[in-house]
Length: 360
Ligand SMILES: *Cc1c(COP(=O)(O)O)cnc(C)c1O
Image (cartoon, rainbow, N blue to C red; front, side, top):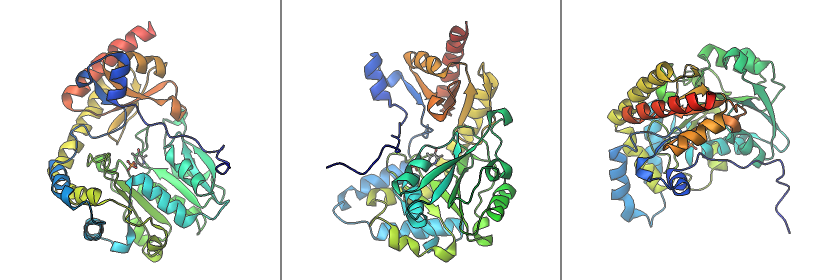
């Protein structure tokens, strides 16, 4: 026998890890800097690390109190009802829950290109079809209501990424409101704010009070530095919130993840340090890198370097791992994650040498 027809499904390709690359190139992993997956350069919050250690001895129990406590805490943070908080195994898990709750077989979704690979993957897992709207490099990747609406054709879910990965561009609240207004009543506008903490612009949270067709995605993977524990959530309209109980995988977030999340939310200093350093690093990269770049509100910068794959390979041999954006359909661009001050300076210096050689 065989699995169902998975030929339209694509495989997610994560950025490569330091261990893997170091082994292949015969380099010392401690000398390598990975700025390829938009991870937090300061690591996890020390409070979260402590919470994980302390909770280790309770791992024989299912997460019950910790899950409820974290939902309460997140609800308080966003001033919404606990039922509006859909905790999940990473932001990706929350994308799955939304697809599971919204899609009937054959429903279509509308995703950005270039864009986050997991949107179409998640929709296809849930028997959905995928259409795309184009974010044009010729317009400097501008994200307006028209960018989306010109390609909208009644899809059930419209995915917006703000700040966008990998471009760093944003939607205004007004643009999101217009998109929600102009699309069908039965179309969910899902705003992915995975990088929201790094942005100077406000969250789309106020739209949840105005409308019942907007949801927001947030994650602990980026600013909170907890990518490894897998914790994220959706904030959903009040009216259909009880759907969570009907679609969620039991114990959607692990005990370890919930304890880490609770502690991380108490560590404002860690988030502030991460956000401030990212703001410094993205300006530094834009000023010092010998390549065209785009303004970014995330913890990364997109740069045009000619042949991204050659540049990425050459930088890697010098111990700097950055993201070749070929898989995003931008083979001339790289994405550089904001590092610590020292790592960012070293990455820019190595990249400038590499770019000079590659262009020569
Ligand atoms: C990182 C990221 C996410 C969420 O990642 P998780 O680790 O699953 O929480 C969601 N959307 C975008 C655009 C991202 O870059």
